[in-house]
Amino acid sequence: MDRLACVDVPALPLQLLIRRHPDCADQPAAVLTRDAPQGEILWVNAPARRCGVLTGMSYATGLALVHDLRGVVITTGDIAEGVTTITEQLRRFTPHIEPSEDHPGVFWLDASGLQPLFTSLEHWAHRVQRHLSQSDFRGHVVVGFTRFGTYATSKIDGVTVFQDAAAEQRAARAVPLTRLDIDPELRDVLDKLGVRTVGAFVDLPAAGIRKRFGRDAHRLHRHAAGDLVLPLQPLPPAEPLTRHTDLDASETDVHRLLFLIKHDLDPLLSQLATRQEALAALEIRLRLDTSAFAPRTERVEQIRPAEPTLDARQLLNLVHLRVEGRPLPAGVTEIDLIVTPARASREQLRLFQQHAKRDLRAADRAVARIRAEFGNDAVVRACLTDGHLPEATFAWLPLAHVVRPTPTTEQTRSLVRRFFVHPRRLPSRLRHEPDGCFRDAQHGPDGWMLRGAQHGHVVHLHGPYVVSGGWWRTPVLREYYFARTRDDAWNWIYYDRHRRAWFLHGEVE
Image (cartoon, rainbow, N blue to C red; front, side, top):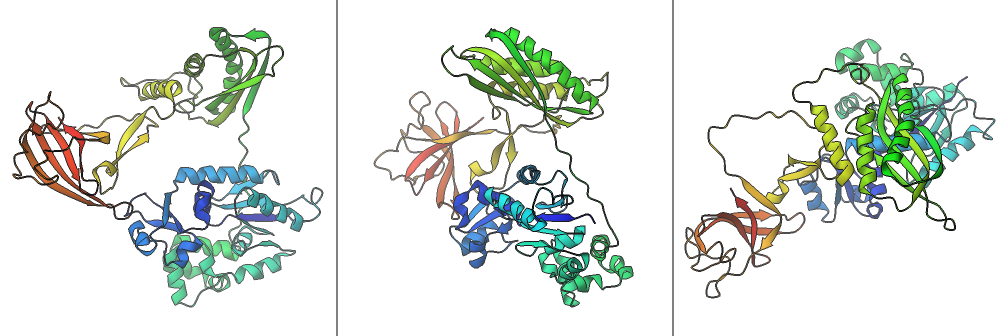
């Protein structure tokens, strides 16, 4: 009989947080939806849970309970990258692995035919768990016979190997429903009915499950009862395509190197097109020959286009920008190309393409060229965020793709307030007038040179507009003003009560 194993990495986002910040292992920490006081807490570690912090609370509520609570945002991209990392690590023990789409951190493995390589399945399971722990992942390993049976029993700590299907079924029926990743509302309703274990849930009549609890509960019931048996659907490994070239003599000319790279790149792109794939990333390894006596060194360049592509001209353009921007210290003796594939779209495989008047793909290629020459953080976009302080109401995020603009018609022209990245400290006011106090809210102090003699003194003021808060990190108390100088320029300034100083935060145009 075929053997199936389930590896459960519980609370994967929280484990990714601890891997990224090892100092959070022994102090209260939580995974947030967003880094803001109103951000929801999704996962908490044991020290935070002992202090009363629970999932579903806001970050501000958690900080009110634990003043040193560490909150970190773990995005879906971070979770997907963690799943990929664990999948590649598990391939050392079996080639057939299926990551769960519904429960990130759950993996099903084909455990059949491993006895010739390991002394027993118990030895194999302990090796898997030990390898995960060496990679700073805590996981449970269960070897059994069914998909749901191994998944349910993997929620119990440790390593379990079932010798027969009946033992697996008995253990799965005893698992509490609170251990499973099911809908909390369904779990609460079942708890009111006295259904608290998998066995009690399976014993419910199947005909009424869908009608009373919905489609998801009916599907879960079929899995638990063994009526819905799905075969293992392993994820095929994304093996990169490689090409190696040895040069007879060391080469230093950039254009000749590009010709050699193109000579190796064209066959790789043809193989990708045959496999219905496109190039997602290109790694170039250049072996340098520094001298006849010194050891050879290697230079590695990573090229990532705006989207997976089969366009050799676009890729060579990016390679040319990268190689030309960083001169080679010595001649090249060997060239290795490593291609990371991705599934190609139908449009990428078409022979002829029809372009619109405004080609957004051409804009993405231009952005990719800028990133290749100046770095991956050279192109960003502004994004509105929820924040209390003015500088926290927006953030700069990397621009992945250029989108078509959707302008709205405005009846009146709005004033534009431009922020400075760092507020500029202003000179102090006249000594006979205390800082932070104006005699007239509409007129500034006589002779106060806000920005030097070239702008003149302040002739008009609007304010104050008090901004206070930041108690969850550092207390802030600012009094904002709009100040007009003699040259008719409007400045956005504030007085910091805690620092007892004036700052220029921006300009109004």
